[in-house]
Amino acid sequence: MRILIKIGSALISKNHKIDYSWLAVKIQQMAALQKAGNSIVLVTSGAVAAGMEINGLQERPQEVLRLQMLSGQGQVKLIRFYQAQFDIHNVPIGQVLLTHHNFDKEKELKCIVSIIDAYCRAGVIPVINENDMVSKDELSDKERIFTDNDILTALVGKNIGADLTVILTDVDGLYTADPKSGGGEIVKDVKTVTDDIFKMATKKTNALGLGGMYSKVQAAAVLNEAGIDTIVANGKYALTDILEGKSPRTFFHKA
Image 1 (cartoon, rainbow, N blue to C red):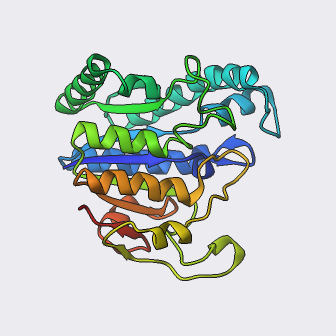
Image 2 (cartoon, one colour):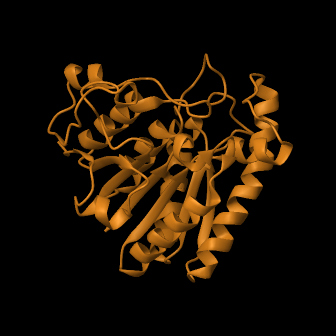
């Protein structure tokens, strides 16, 4: 099974730093799934958070150029950690940096799909992130395209033929009201993403995140339309428990 896993900023960062202990555990779980015969594709956020850590910053800057610089520094630190941890489990990885422009041109899109597919067939986990050094859209409040990589995940998933997408975040799934405000009940199954479903989804996020639950529902809608089941779940739970429905989650059913 080709499983696309997305790790967002709200989950990967803690106190404006990468939560390395949590990430190491999640890498072990992804490596185990890979060794069990699945093809794992990873979309990760965290480059800006890693850059802030390097520079000792406690607040996310607003200037786009500064954010691009932080992302460039952080991307190196982040991918080194991924490589070192996956090496422990003897699972190779390859980095893939993308912008939304890559999906607009047929030739570039075919190249992306070909590379990711080749990695999967070779047993290499593609580690995908937004290329902030080329595109400023994700960093600008006015021009956000990938909304914390949720929409990037949807574009990748539908084009590489993922069998299942798992979007990991810091809440248990979609709620009928904002769970961080102490209300609502979890929505366990979504057969069709309707306007009512979107109304349940908050756009609130943390200081490093961009999309909130709203962008995750957007991504799920795109993936479902492409025939891909999608799970939104809390990254504090083990991946096997999430996949098997042993922990809370929202399951968005493919069309």
